[in-house]
Image (cartoon, rainbow, N blue to C red):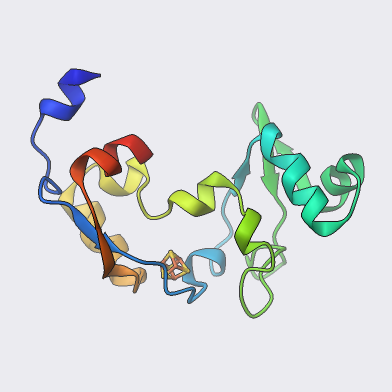
Length: 134
Ligand code: SF4
């Protein structure tokens, strides 16, 4: 683990980021919205439904876990003029855009930076904080 922190990255000096809640990452092309089992209860409670109903209505199984369903146009089931579960959204949503696949190269990051207007805004996230999120 220490090795990971001692290496040099293109984000050595950190990255400014603050979500602008534009919805770009919640809409568009279909994708997988991973949700962990330990996140079911807090979202179900927020929606005032039982966990089995929540799973049945909003999720589908994928690999060894679950993904949130999407509308036919690729929009997240919980996106309706903004995220309707924002305060309890899954970690996958909370940690975007600091995903391994986005940070593996400067080229990938440049691409995601063009799509996400939150990159370059808001507080500075240090290299250590970013690695922690990954
Ligand atoms: S694309 Fe970026 S700014 Fe827009 S909702 Fe997603 S994380 Fe927030």
